Image (cartoon, rainbow, N blue to C red; front, side, top):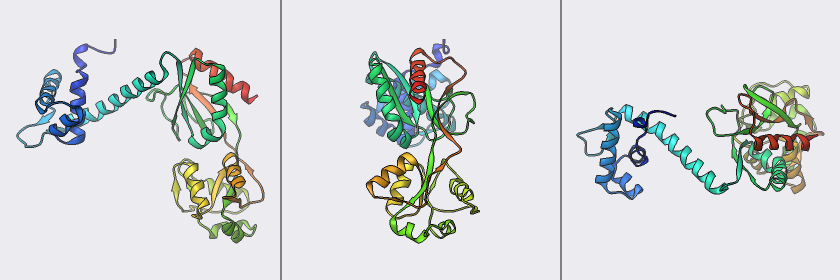
Length: 294
């Protein structure tokens, strides 16, 4: 049992609290929830009585929340979103089994999708739901069964399955690349674009070519897709993985700024929590990925 029932207010009361906190008034909450103003007020009064804690500030024209009320509303908002997402996932999948997979967006679009489609075709009763997560997280606090991770084996409390190596290459518009003239030191004269999840990537690449540089500044992006598009528009040089660079080369939107790809010291992994054995469905997906990579 999760806890005594007296600690579980009605959904209507919690929705009223969340809406009042977010919108700032009972009237606005009533309109959003398709309730009357008095009905919202009753829900809030019942909630406060059930919890036996003052949640609201009285004596004002507009209803206000105490600090305790605001903190409670923030927590409830997160829980309500998770319930809504779980319901949406269940409704979309029906009686089918599913895997909730955290992915790196660009890698998922260009490399992972064929494997996922192949798996779902071979296992017609399984759905793979994907959500973007560019950085490691706690499996205990997130609703994912597994994730795609790029880097070293530095994600604690997970199992690892290597699924792909990576090569990188600097890219730019033809005009920018001509300005480099094949000399690594000329990179430092041009703007460089950076990815949030790969700090120091340019410094590391330049060091591999025998050019030391520190604290390179430039525009910052949260995804390879945005970074590559900015480079194609002439905003600066991009350091791209092979699967994405080759797409832009084929389209003629970017050209290589160096003579060859450089192998990365890091890898792409499928990871899943080590604290519990994988479910049968996840286990089949892990085996599918392992066979696809062999």
